[in-house]
Amino acid sequence: MKNIIVTGGSGLVGSRLKNYIPDAKYISSKDYDLTKEDDVYRMFLELNPSIIIHLAAKVGGIIDNINKPEEYLYDNVMMNTLLVKYSYKFNVDRFIGILSTCIYPDVYDRYPMI
Image 1: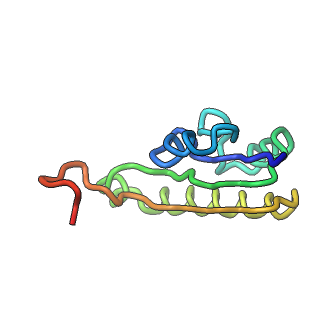
Image 2 (image 1 turned 90 degrees about the vertical axis):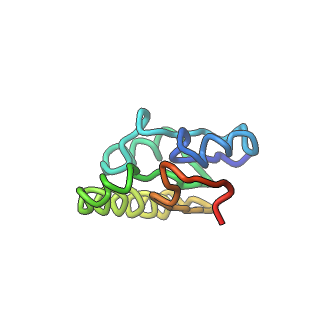
């Protein structure tokens, strides 16, 4: 049986994905700090994934992104880099990475947005 790990499990996409892949292990920032190499290594040792669905990201609002661009860039690059590095080292069969940030406005006068 495939051991599926979903990072960003409490986020917008991750929380919905639970309906489609209920047996996956859903990881949030409460479980591991994916910007820290020791935590990523520990996660791979403890969970031994065969499939990674990487949805985790540092997110905030547009204003926070504007005020702290280096923090957002650094944290997201570190998460992506470390997860790819250890996926390779641990012979993960499949790595699916999805990243988006600030794609939805806080307020919009009409939905769906077109």
